[in-house]
Each structure stands twice: as C-alpha cells, then as structure tokens.
Amino acid sequence: VIIDVHGHFTRAPQALYQWRAFQLVTLGSPRKAPLKVSDDELDALLHQWNLKKMDATGINKLIFSPHASHMGHHVGNPLVSRYWTETCNDMIAQCVRLHPDRFIGVGQLPQHANAPDTKACAEEMERCVNEHGFVGFNLNPDPSGGAQFLPSMGDEYWFPIYEAMVKLDVPVMIHASATQDPQSHLNACHYTAVDANAVVDYCLHPELWDRFPGLKVIVPHGGGATAFNYTRMRSIFINEGRRPFEECVANLWFDLAIYDAESLEMTVRRLGVDHVMWASEMWGSAYNVDPLRGKPFDETIDYVNQIGWLTAEDKYKLFEGNARKVFTRAKFD
Ligand SMILES: [Zn+2]
Image (cartoon, rainbow, N blue to C red; front, side):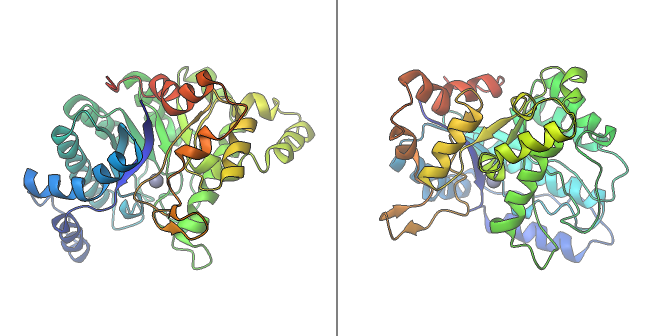
C-alpha cells in the first residue's frame, strides 16, 4: 500500500471560490452562507485531478486537506476564518464520503492572527473528528502571513490545540498559508521558511513532549531543508547548552514532499527511516513535467525505490508503516 500523507483540494469547485469571493466583499458583516455542491460535480473533479494522478502513479490512499494557500488566516477577523474553515472542511468531508477507500480527511483550522487564543481551533478539531472522521489537521505557525509576531510554538497560546491533539489522538502537519511579505515567494520561500522555523522552534521546546505525551507534529517538505542544516543545528544546540539537537528533532515527523532525488535521500538518511513519510503534495508546486526527466516533478516514488541502502522494511515504513503510526485514527484497510 502506498500512502501519500500530503495532498490538497487545489482543484476545488468554482462554487467554493465564489463563496469565498462573496465573503471577501462582505467582511464587515460575516455570516455563514450555505454552500451546496452536488456529489456528481465533486466526483467529476476528483476523477479529473487527484484520483487520476493516484491511479496513474500507484498511490492507494491520500491524506486530503483543503487548499492551503487559500486558508487565508490573515483575512478579516476570527469569525471570517471560522466560517471559511468550516465550509472548506465540510467540502473535504464530502469528498471523503464519496471515496472513503481513497481519501482520508484532514482539516484546516480557524486560526486568525488577531484571535486572542486558539480555543476555536480545538472546537473545530473536535467537530471534524466526531462528525467527519478527520484524522489530522494543518497548523499554521504564522497566521498573519509575516505581518505580525506570533508566540513561539512552545508558548501556551498553542496549548488548546495541543490538548485537543492529545485528547483526540490526531497529528498536525505544520502548514503555512499566505504571505504578505513582498520579498517572500509563497511556495518557493514562505512555505519552506515556515517549515524550517517550526523545526527549530519545536526543538527549542522539547518540554512540550513532557507536558503533552503523544504529541505528533509533522513538518512537510523535509522540514524545509532540515537535513541540509542538520550539523549547524547540532553545533548551536551544544553552544547554548541545550538537549542535543538529534534528540529534540526525533520528536518530530517529516514528509518527503521533496522533488530532488539527492535531497530526498539525504533527508531519509539524516532524519531516519522511522521519522519520514513519503508525500507528493499533489496538486501543488511540483505538478509540472521536469524537462530533464520527462515526467512530473512530484512523481518521486521511484526516488525512494532507487535508494540502494533501504531495506524492504525501511521502504514499508516510508510508504505505509510510519503513516499508520502517526494517523492512528485513519482506516487504511
Ligand atoms: Zn501542502
């Protein structure tokens, strides 16, 4: 079984984007407008995009979440974020109901840069797990999109989310959304920068795992080049008299939405076969055809299979076993 732990509904129905457009022009008086998309319309889109790619490339199961760059946690006020989040999560749930054997639901959170706390996130987690059977959530460390300073991931600001994660036994995947910084390209810079920040920030707070045993945090895109800077971090953590970096980083999980064979192999070697999971992040930054290879950048199953030193058991962990450990609520069979 090949499980892709990172895929988004980036080819969603026009009606969803129209819903958001209407919300954006009525920001002053947020309300929860109904949204109805037929099963037939949704099914056609799934077959046209995600299912088509899954069938063509041999992906059996997809951890499926809303369009991340559209989460827009910097827009409007917390109520705007809540209504939009509920609408997006309900649509993911509808997709999962259509193909429960292929899609596994993960939600976005009603975060907002100006929210005084993260209690609304915990409520939405509870709703999505209990009503929709979701198995995880995407967590944005920077809901302001670079415009404000948010508390460290070790701060109690985030504790309601961590408490809900432990109570519901669900992981989060660190996932940025928009950036308002003109110097920071969304997919090329902001996403991977937020990933890299989150890795170090969590490693600076290993006490979180003492306080919240069983906390499961996945950092995508190889942790934003964590393997590349691994030894720099080891040095800094020694300089500052901290717990060893290699010990702290072992609290985290990583995905392999990395589109370079050498970087992918280095990530597996540095972070360890027990901490990484294969992912494509379809349809995301790497859907185009690599002219050097003649196939899409995000088709990297063969990169894993070509790593000569991996055993069959190692490959099982990367494609399936680790995902089963992390997404304990998912029904993969
Ligand atoms: Zn993503």
